[in-house]
Length: 629
Image (cartoon, rainbow, N blue to C red; front, side):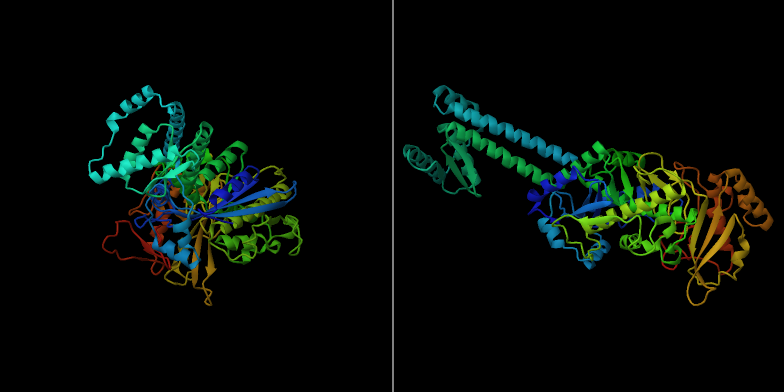
């Protein structure tokens, strides 16, 4: 269901009520941009603080166009879920500037984003400071309404003392008309009010002639001074209505004005109210919130609905996210975890024979097909025989996405994300139970870990970030890896198998090189992988150094004493010296690999520097992008 300004007041209470009983929710967002023009290039070896420093500006600069939220309700303890997706167009209420990334806007335009609906009908929102300010203003308004109506009732007896007091108390605020036409207009208006009061059988309201804001101010003060028992309200843009009400009617009208003010407050706060309700459910009953590759989604949520400025410190940013959402699941991380488990447990499936699903729709398609998984492990030997099959149906009136085809609409992507979460949890629990003998019936696996792209560190929202190494796609793992693999693209299209490059590498149980085919010529490869099998620290470092000595290559690593030196990594707080010039063990394996690539004729060539380049050596070994080693 699409939610806009037109139906937010009607539909949002239903959404908030459903949220109270949801088993979990999945979210997705579409934004006006995800990287700023001056964002620095990312590097494999950087820490999460360094990566956060590079990406933090995007959620502070760009805006959310759509928030997609899909609620999942489990049915009677069975493996059946009812999905209720809401697609919410959002537009700021607080004067936040709108910045657009042309790349993102073009992409969304291709995928049928309704920018007109976003601008004209987006549901407004505030952050925490904006909501607090508007709430304070409303409370002040409501208090004045109550005080004014009680004073009005008290003064209607035309007690001269109270009238005199009222005049004296406002004497320093009186506005006096000077032009003859203004004097005559005020006098004529007051005379019409006296006639209105003398006609007791007439209507209970009188609408005065239209006038400008200056004359309206004079009329308000004169009516209050001369007719304290009457009430006034604005009609349209330029008129005042005078109301003759009894005491009960005056109090009822005051209550109505306060309700209108509260409705305006809630409309201005808008999607922020959903953010708050979502956090309450997540904290009060540990309800999971699920995302896909969710670091940016979470940072955009925080910058829009909590604080416009994100913390500068990555650890503080994690703490804030965790304080609002204590149980987070990232399906892209869970997918890498499942892949790791399948590889480590040597489970047969078709995954190794097909292209890895890199985007959300491919992952969804792959996971829902039981033929992609070993039947002995996961059950089922045909499309309908999966023992882990999960029945997911749409709630009544929410069938928009039943036939699919809405990729990159936030609510549809949220629906895909929630389904992937259920599939991934089922597969991971099966491995844990059937192959490892664990009991995971009431356990969620891979929680509070976020996918990190091309990094040796993995985000842990609930604690210290984890050094994990990487696999062939630089996909992080759930714990310290047994193997670190470095992927290098063969941009120069050389014959890697017959190249002198291989003489610098050792094939064996602990150290190997792998290739993937690049076309009809099986010897010309697109990618080669260098794998380091890490056993124990002492054992691996000693064995690696011995191989270096035997091959008389990489002597700059001969003195390394730890994993940190081996990788050129001093820890999460230390900036790595990787990819710089010169030798020495401090550069670690990255510097060693760079030396090999620079030293082998034809394996890689040093790119000519252009004006404005930094002093860091860059090796042109990628088909499309420069890769720093």
